[in-house]
Image (cartoon, rainbow, N blue to C red; front, side, top):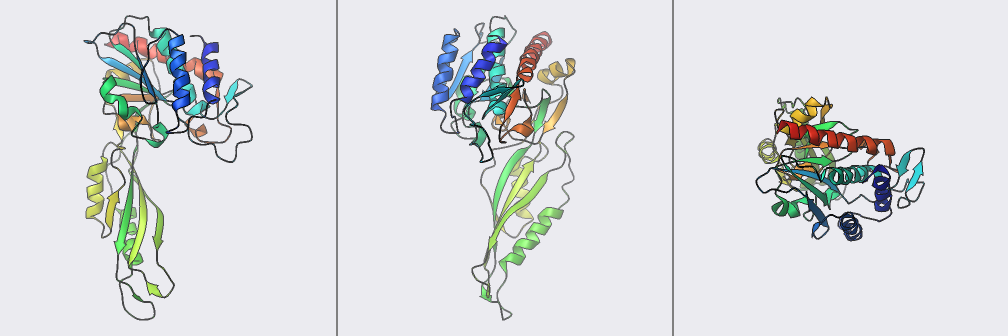
Amino acid sequence: MNLERTIDLLKALIAIPSFSKEEKEVADFLESFLIENSLRPFRKENNLWVKGSHWKESNPTLLLNSHIDTVSPNQDWTVDPFVPLEVDGKIIGLGSNDAGGPLVSLIATFCQCNTLNLPFNLLLACTAEEEISGPRGIRYILEEIDPDFGIIGEPTSGKVAIAEKGLMVIDALAHGVSGHAARDEGVNAIYTALQDIHDLQNHPFRKESPWLGPLKISVTQIDAGTQHNVVPDKCHFVIDVRTTELYPNQVLFESLQAMTESDLKARSTRLNPSFIEPNHVLVKAASDLNLVQYGSPTLSDQALLSIPTIKMGPGDSARSHTANEYIYKHEIEAAIVLYKALISQLAKNI
């Protein structure tokens, strides 16, 4: 699978709307494409995976994974997001950067490496619902594929993310006692919420990740009161928490509840931070190739995997979810070379 065919595949994917939970058409197309390229994909709903031709049950398995879904286009697009354009060496279209470019690069890499007799199995997985961390995405097929470690294809400008911040969204409810605002009665729930917000903002979380920096807590929404002359007995606010490997979500949630008067309820604690040990064979292979390593502030399917993973791929994360999203052809070409080099180096180290 050469570069020209890889770019043609990207353009074909752009032309098929594939919003989260609506990936059937693109999964159908990609399944046919893989079959046409002499591969034998497995499928579960809108998730596809292919085992390498030298598969041995006794070998560890390297997962090559990226996602087939996209966000919806925003109103600032000046071109049709589903008509791929090639202008001055870049491909413009919805999902071109996040994560069409990484996806087709991994597919090309898999096709080119599939004939190699490696000391590990290659497993390609093209999965759904990544943009919403949905239940019918990669988590839905983990029991089927059972990888040992993996490369997650996302736009990282070719750098290697060895850590990724987690996410926890918390609904907080401060309680008070209603009363007339003109008299000295009632307990104002807004004031209780403000005290909790102050404590959250100023609490000294002293542990700082060397890769991800400090924990970040932001209050992003607040709502209280029914009319101007009634002391509110309830105040709801939302807390956005970006966690690091030093503060697992559930442990941190319990700590936050202990320090606040408001009742806290986490919408989910499953989007944990991810971190791969610096001495892991994947990180060592990246180091041997002198690849830049960093901690990523953005979330991906790494959060849903319990195996060691790195995140890397062509494109720039800053372009994701933006109008007139694009990726350069030379970035895809370089990514295929880089993925293949990493696989080769990994084979030497195992």
